Length: 466
Image 1: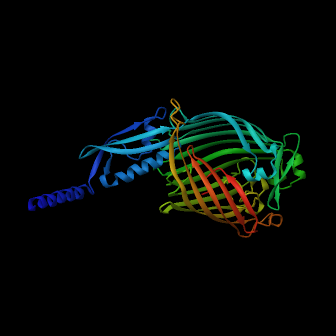
Image 2 (image 1 turned 60 degrees about the vertical axis):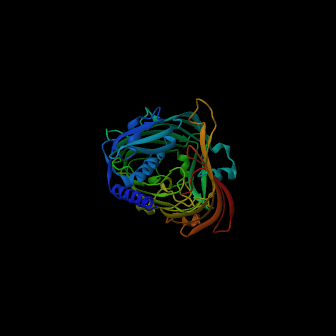
Image 3 (image 1 turned 30 degrees about the vertical axis):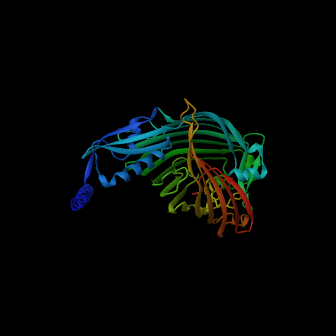
């Protein structure tokens, strides 16, 4: 028995010594093997891993390396499923294995969108004249290099034709990216002002507004999680003189035409586990935009704006999660003399207070706070439909989340606040919701809320709330 105990003690000591030796010891990445990528180039996948062949990795950091690689690959939106692991070739060398399942990338289809701030504001009136429809062709992984090429042909409320081309990897290290945006649109209806925090429209039988936008972008991404972006271009807005009967401050100087150069810089740090519906991590996005450089028309628009977004997501324990986000905008050049075309406060895109979906709060500055407490009612489930030959669709996942939320926001309006009572005072709301999350970044949210004015509402959204 004594000999047996001695053997056990010796074995434990050997295991302990091996563990201590492993701590702080590095291994060499001998190879990176990518499996499952039919269209995506290997080097596109390997760029997101952070470690390449010949790099040295601390053994006790391997788990973190694999988790980060899975996170960044998932957030490329190129793959439905990602797995990353490693095998030891010997005590000093490893092979990183990356297994992916690609999404469907080419989407010829039908354009169907609503010319409203959100689905709920359209549903309030169900005005079928405010529907955009048409055709588009989009390749989300053009040439297998993560390039995005889009042709858009749109009719309906706004007629539009456009071309957008994004190239994330110009150089060998894929640290530089570029983009081109060409767009022409015209309208028979114009949102010329807001009153009682609702948008006011003027409609005619002929086209009364045209917009032409030409822009280029440059992106620098030396580190995986940080992006610097620069945009330069020209925007032209032309209106019919009938618009002036409704608004004398729609374009600068009460002119029928506004043409200006724009320049912007932005920085983004993305550390969320999933951009479609994040549960852990954070994102910081800052941009400074200059509309008008004084090089085309001396009396045209000259305005500077800054935008900030900060979101934090964390797991509290078990199935509980918490998230909060802040968003802000400041206009710091010619803010008190801003034509309505350039005024956007809360109520547009994803900058809105839940419970105020049917309102807009125009202004020159705003601050927004959102918070969510979530419970994972139905854990992520993966279903294999077994459809041979369509592996990009036969395997999918879904989950359900219950959530309680509270939002607050403040808009500074020094121009039209007498017409819009929600400006220049705090607005807030609270409510409950149910989120359905599935693959291809699809999110469907059902929310009931009550706002500061005591108005209850039930709303549907199609993006993650924070």
